Length: 226
Length: 226
Image (cartoon, each protein chain N blue to C red):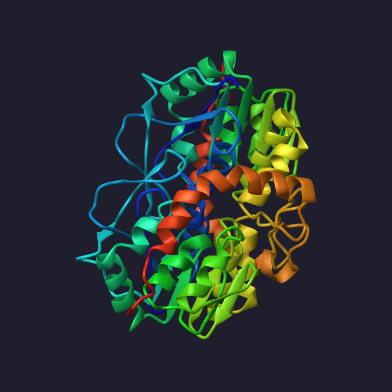
């Protein structure tokens, strides 16, 4: 079987599960060869006090069949990083799949890679996509041509199984689900549409001050090419 | 709010999501202070080519309110590591919760910490618990006194929400589910009981040669105290 090279982007203050969820699932895909690409080879700190070690740098990275961009509070800094955005645009020219998890879609958007595309995002950040010419869709996995973008955090696991189903069919995807015992039992209320109104209102109020600065930074990013 | 100190055990060839899933969820628990405890501070390689960086060594670890032991193909080596088992027994004397994900329960069992307890495990490994005096229960989260043990891999996410619900109540658990957009959409068939028979049979046949050596190693581990 031919190798299918997958490059995950690493950057400081990423939301750890945005990357590790799909990394676990996609690593089990037949032929998958996975890299974690950082600015340099120094461990990258995530939001969980857990530092992740790159296998490649931007400068010596492979050319990937699939790139995966996670999200997190570190997203605004990457959206302002012309070097990282340039790397993504360059990879996207030849990648078969250009993908993201959570508000990682804002990074793809800032690189000009979602203009005219439907895209997923964490529900609290999705409205920022419009300014970059993308249309936010509140689903766990949004497929538009070769852009496959997930919703918030845990969506990355469903997104990864969807990619495997698309590339290898249902039997392979179900086999990997069985290997990873993927039979989730959520409490319910995991989306704004299904959450109890008082839980959603309280969370929105708590997030607002924490999101003010990153939102201002995101709104200061020029849409690519302007 | 008082701190609630959580220590995750790191060891080579752990299944990455066993640790990173609950780490993401439990990091958001009010008061949580999370450590990743390794033999030393060198990055520890997981099954996904992703190396994780310890924050503490066994020797300079804190005393934890909760210890979490992940699973993976690296489990048999830890079951034979008297130093690591001794550390777990010592921590378990004062920990409020002694927990594991996937076949990490075999490590707790080898340390003598599950004798007379009901326990979860990855479905392919659960039958090995009996020799250590534990009773395998095929559920995503198994609670028996202060031992809380999860099923395979992705069960660790449900396990973590269950712990938060137990410690902080339903509203806090649902709020963190909403933050992490936990509204999974599995394909179905993620357990032996629900999988299509041909998928299960094929997977068992594929796993058998890979599991032969680790199973032999596990069966060579003396039950603690003998």
